[in-house]
Length: 453
Image (cartoon, rainbow, N blue to C red; front, top):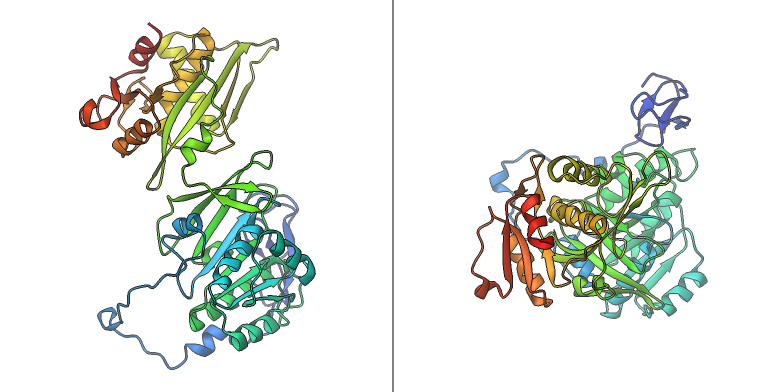
């Protein structure tokens, strides 16, 4: 950065340029650079609080065990790694209307109903509007305080005066600090306010939840440095046309990023789903070509999902490929394997693949299910409804081993499935111990022969 008072920051990637550019040299986004002005030099709260400290050996630092407390919602606790960590800064992002504010208002109500003081800061709604939503969500409590404020300095003063058990800020893009002349939501304001709230959370041991908007590309609005400042980043996924919502962690300094939380949107708010497999398979048709059940693993939780494929003759010059749920490139690879290794002529066929329920799945363990669903629809031969397919497929057409296969098979047996296609390389217990028939396969050709012979 040069010595001028003005610089330009990319809203997509946070690149800083001394002059305006039509195209960002880092992320190559057009018209993404916005003008910002330097703030007058001043020590931040974190800098003022760290003076006088000296480096010490790490062995002399107190190894206190983290004491988490429940958010009142078990699925949220699961994604956070077992509960809320005192002094943590958590950022929740997602599409508009997906349920971010609903989730945190429900959690705030449950925590406050246990006698804990909760401060809910809203910069987008009035107090009466938030009260109406809390009434619908049954989140009313005397210890739940509402604050309609967007000035960071005033918000910090109220937090220091009330010392709540938890703070919710809805949303970070509405806050501004008086030390910057730029508008709320700008790159500089988002970065500065998030840094100040992080310093406050660490010094006071008060956990703070931030709600963040996303761009049209699906990324959190503001600089990418915002994700590096916070301790945990959660994304709310789901199609607004479906009732299911998936809460997924993409960063967690205090737990695993593999866990997910499953919710169902209803009239009185978000309801936790204790058994996602049973819910996702509730409307599964039987005896229909192109439908098969696969077992994926999200953290420590196995989930059964239905894959649906539709293959039909193309009336256009170029066949269409539409994928909802799995990775598009992975599905294209499976189609190429069916053509090359099995001999199915799919070049002139329209292929549509979908995961029922609107769930996004990128795990390679569903490769075998993709192969079988497309082949079933192409041959117009249904797959037995009591069959589950598990396995990763390599470029040679081999079915490769997958991790935690025993957990997946036991979940299938618990839901009443009778047989399971599994990779030969995975060592499993006997069928009597697993409670389900096991069909080991070593290639996609062998799997097709077992199901369609």
